Image 1: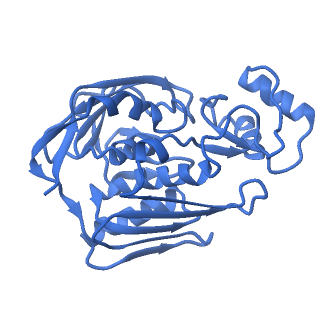
Image 2 (image 1 turned 135 degrees about the horizontal axis):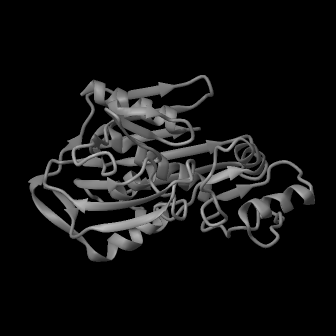
Length: 300
C-alpha cells in the first residue's frame, strides 16, 4: 500500500512571474494527510486559500490560473508538476503575489531544492483517482486528451506545431522514467514571432534568456535579433543552424515535447490527486488539459 507523503521542511523561492513581471516570494510547506495541494495568497489574508482543483480554474490564457473568492494564483502548472512528479500528496503553498515565479522555466529549481531531503511518510493511504469510464476531450484545433483506467500510470504526449524546426515530437512518463531527471528539467518554449508580438503587447513581462527556449521558425533579420538582445538586455544573440536562438542549449533533443508533458502532469494534478490511468495527449495545452481534469472531477 502506497502511503501519502509530504515535505520534510519548508522551501522558499523568489522571482518574477513570466506574464506579469511581478516579483513573488513563494514557500512550499508540509501539510497534514488528506490536505492535497492548496495555495494561500498571504498578501490577501491568512484564510485566502485556493485549492488546486479543476473547478477552481479561472483562466488558461498562456498558463493555468486558479481562483477562489478574491484570491487568484497564475502559472501554477510547473510547481504542481514538480510535486506530482516527486510524489508529494500534501502541501500548502504560500505566495505573496498573483503569479508563481517562472524561475528557469522548468520544474528543476523545485526538484533541486526538495529532492535530496526526501519526504515525510504519513499515516494514511494514498488516494488514487480511478476512472470507471474513459474521459476523452477534443477541441477545434485537433487537440486530444484521453484518460482511461489502467493498473499502472502512464502519460504519453505528441506535439505538432507544423514546425520545420520542432518537427513532430513525442515524450512519455511512466514507472520507467525518472521525472526529476528526464521531465522536470525541461524548460518552456516560445516561437520568435510570438515573442515579438507578446513583448510588443506587454504580455510577457518576466521573460529573460534563462527561462525560455526560443524557436526561430521563420526568417528574421539581424535587426530583429538585435532588438531581441536589447529587450533581454544581453550580448548579441544569434540564430543557430538548428533554428533555435542562441540563448540556451537544449537539455534534450525533444525538450519541447517533454516540457509539454511537464505541463500536462501539472494541469492534470487538478484532478485532485494521483491518476491511476493511462493518459494520451496530442497537441495538448492548458485549455484542453484543464477541461479534461474537470471532466475527471465530474465523473467522480
